[in-house]
Image (cartoon, rainbow, N blue to C red; front, side, top):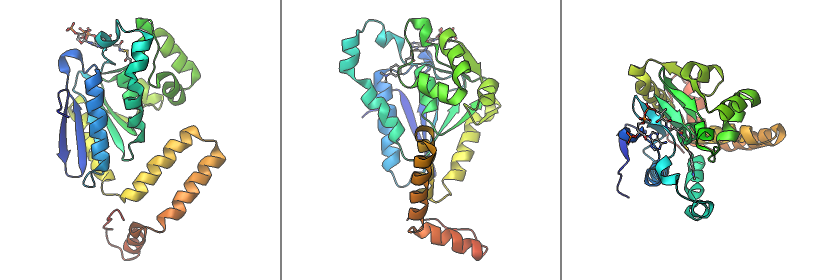
Length: 257
Ligand code: DAK
């Protein structure tokens, strides 16, 4: 697929996706979502990449799905378009995804952020689900993930008014990991990604899966899932390497096996 609305870079073992539709504040049109999902999947398959960073620009991470593409469609057009089939593939990416957010992360942009695993924001970042202002509601997880992240009453207030959270507020509510000056938000995200790529990839993968299960499963089932994965890691070469390196007081060299 030729990439029209995103740019893709590599920095060592980190794959970087830049949303690049600046005149429309990175509004996510259908082709752009296809490009994002296909790139995430190809990075997920690439053994040379161990973590992914997704970012926009200083003004906007993404100001939502492209309203122009939705204005005149009806329910059946939406159903036949079945864009959720593509969107749902984001949640299946196994490698850690870090969002580096500055400016607007609204609607589908905020829903994309909430599909990421770690979020670094600049002081100018704004997070919100303003779909109610357009006569609709979030459709790509906004009511569910916002509520799980913020709790019922704050999510309700924001979803019903369409207002957004500042970066500091988002930090307070646990929606994001940290707020940094705008000059360094992408560097911070890349630094964090570069720390993760030094970790044993199989353990990283199973930790990501286990944390995501914690959101959906009752505790006993989540603990069972965790325990099985814990046992499984004792069959990996990286477990032997990690523990032997500790005993030998040297840095481990993880191979992903
Ligand atoms: N779609 C299309 N164009 C957009 C846009 C959007 N979401 N957001 C901004 N733009 C365009 C503006 O139309 C404008 O274009 P020109 O007029 O220059 O041609 C340009 O970007 C700059 O925007 P503004 O002039 O409005 O800039 P301001 O700084 O004054 O305001 C703003 C920035 C972000 C407050 C404002 O642009 C705004 O309110 N934008 C809309 C935000 C919004 O309502 N987002 C939610 C959209 S609904 C799905 C997955 C997800 C979704 C749906 C389906 N499937 C998987 C099926 C999600 C739905 C949504 O996100």
